[in-house]
Image 1 (cartoon, rainbow, N blue to C red):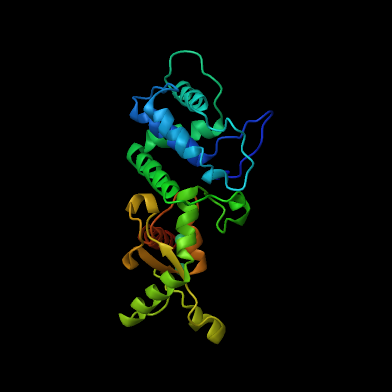
Image 2 (cartoon, rainbow, N blue to C red):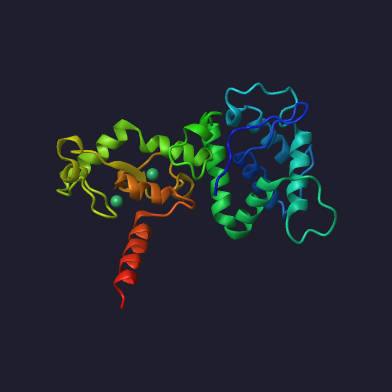
Length: 251
Ligand SMILES: [Zn+2]
Ligand SMILES: [Zn+2]
């Protein structure tokens, strides 16, 4: 599923709510028994203060009333009334609201963990650049958690520590899923090349720092397949690959 993270302007001073903001608002609504919160509630004040820092719209020119407590109340009402089973007339709300609501219904714990990780990353000063939708390497899912995760995967220091650890253990620098070895296939041009991947998304591990065991070595194809759509682990990808091979060799 593609989640558009580039904010778009609507008429007037509206800045569209992006995925991460809706997840935070839906988290507030879900913790309130799927009821909206009033603008003078401590939940609305806290969410407004966090979002008004603008880190999810870095570089954008934000209006003075951006994510005011009143807009938090409106958004939580949109989410409450867009929920399946809501008795009564729905307020506005959009497609992305409904996607987030479905995600909360299917995986309430995972989505609450995602919301806490988004809050933590924002509190630590992480920003989601406006260009992330274009700069996204994998293009299948984009939110702050994925953006920070992918950036850590490309961190040269973390990468060299992981490669040193693998070499010290006597294992080859090759894909953990399909065993592809860039040096074996491409000679000196490919030697030492491998991609580094988090086995689980940041909100699932809940860790602020990445442990080396949490990193897997993958070839470019397997890496992309792990990120495509829902984030799956290298173990799950290997199981899928073996099942495919077995189904083809079956009589
Ligand atoms: Zn591979
Ligand atoms: Zn990865």
